[in-house]
Length: 483
Image (cartoon, rainbow, N blue to C red; front, top):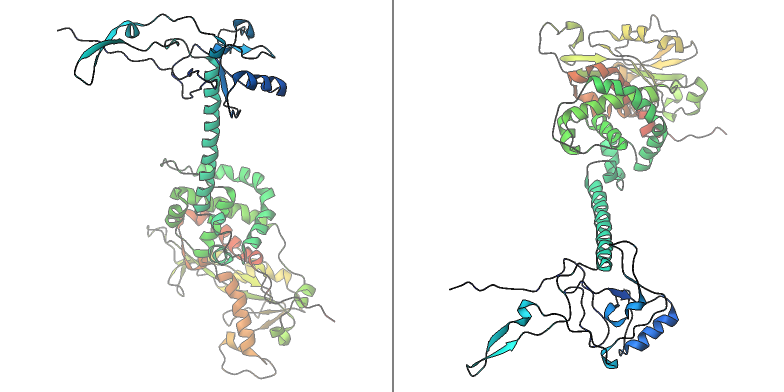
């Protein structure tokens, strides 16, 4: 028994199907590529003639309304010069070939499926032979160029829409990523993660340093080449403003590098590189600003608590930083071990004006160095004059070489009683000085252990953490002009 062959109609490979709007015409581009389909003309008078000639009730012409080439004589077309060009109509032609004016196409040659007789089973069980319906279209012809052009245009439109949706998703992802823009609407979050009082104040600080970033990044590129990052899975890069935000997180919260890497979705070595880079950048930019305030300016902003210490120019202290002790006992030294902190430390001299501004920062010294030696080597003595005064704690035994007056209030010296003529409001002066020192030590960077890989940048980190205090908040007291 021979196997019977099965046949099916051939469809055109097109995602768009066009249909003729003429009544009684069943032409469609889905199963016929020999015909061309034409839109209505833009000319108002010619379009009106087309509508009248078609004779279709309630015809609404849209950009997708088509009339197939069956309804135009051959003389109405102008062929394209290229092989793949579109078949176009001449200007001003009107369709004129319809079934109601006795126009019929010549019969097409039937295919094998159409020429074969079929056996159909009737309802009474008898079979009778019929011929398949004849069609007036060619299913094996090449697709019409107009259909191809329309499909290309639709593909371009879909591709543009996909790109637009991708950009929207990227923007949504940026808002969800950990960075400065995620907390733009919350000043309390900005305060927690950066110690800046508000988002606007942080953006104002960014506007101050942003113009200098291109040249500063070029200077720090050599350092980035020296500390090459190991191969790691691909991670998204951070914008410069997010890198600065990460650096401020490190100073404000004392976060571990691994924690920052998980939050920002980068490698831990990338976090280390960002900390080194931004410590150098801000060290140069902020360090180029003169911070020592003239004597007359200090007195203009002198808080009311200092009325009995009106000549005080600076409050001095020596904060200490912990750093990771080397594992090798040969590299450990007693010079950097602090008995007070019971840890390897570095410390430096810090000067703060009575109204809260940092006015002096010395380089760091070994933890065992005395405060007297640090003050002698810091260079602050050249800034002090006989008419000035400094306020220190009882540990600062520098009376023999300081060229000005030294104040040690009761709450600082540890003495239980002081004459009323010396300290009239000890509690008020104590609260105010604690607020001044707290502004600097509010950065948890001073409470954490500095890893050894950042030891080369320890002076930059310490200086930047102190200088940022002058930009994060306003003065502790409001300026009141003298009457």
